[in-house]
Image (cartoon, rainbow, N blue to C red; front, side, top):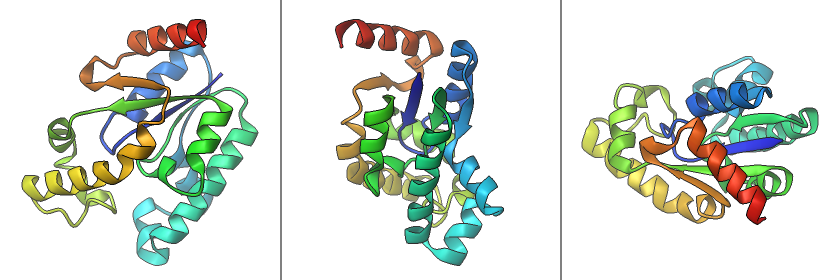
Length: 173
């Protein structure tokens, strides 16, 4: 089984992904962490030195490497992963794709302290600017996120909820 978690920064992809991987007894990977390991530098450093276009190209390559290397995995993707280089098609074609849908207000609360360390949010100084940036980003990404066949909303998204969604999807699909 491959389960891919997509959604906005702060949606809980990594936290929930670790718990799901433990429940299903499969490896967990965080795509950003995989990129950091293979590049030997932080995402912020990659963005600063090479720019977003380079990062997105590298992200697409590492995604394909992880898919090729791991027949079973729970993968937390970066927030923008599904939006570039046909990555969403890779996710949809090779596993189950789950969109973690979290209200922007909740994302702001979760990200206020960490926004400065996230390259695409760092310029948003203060809660109002962060909220505006997140709303703008979500509006651009929603067309990709909405194509995920599985969706879990807000804080009700638990291991048990995802297991129920997967079971229901497998039975009906």
